[in-house]
Length: 228
Image (cartoon, rainbow, N blue to C red):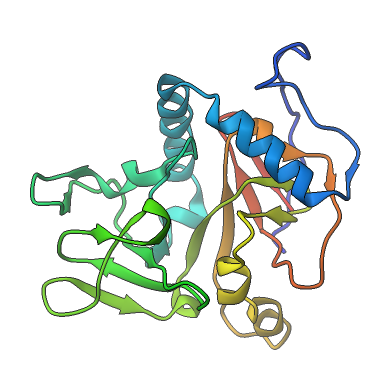
């Protein structure tokens, strides 16, 4: 895991159901997932846009991101922090232009029940599962990248703790895709740096880890960066 110091965290008023902090060990992951999804749904579009812009700016200033040759990212939906600003602006034909990084940016291609595939889009995105647009593979459409060849992966989440334990939406896509990261690191192989991206209120004190969980190396929010 990447070394670093925990940062001072800031939270909103305890009376605010959207920004009130969550403390202590979380063992009921389903209850926490429901609670965080409800909080996220209540966020206004303006708050999501503001937090997303702040996170994108933090990402741009990270040395790990600046040095990445190929990076996995995602398109935020339903109140998620949306890092799509890294891709630039979307043209009328559905392609992107004006990306803010020198890295190649790959988006996930989702097939239910399977690990994620990552594709650098060269053509327009198409409708995918769960209401999320995604690239396709082929000439003029997109170039596939092995997930383990990505230098950095931005990982969406529902909740995470300061040690990098993560709760996703429950489908297990990222855990399946990056299940061999720890094994690769133990043997000295290059592996992706896994970067959680979320609103600051989604970071809690401690989540009970499960054997299948793939921990994050760091978490980036609108408030700051936590290294695990």
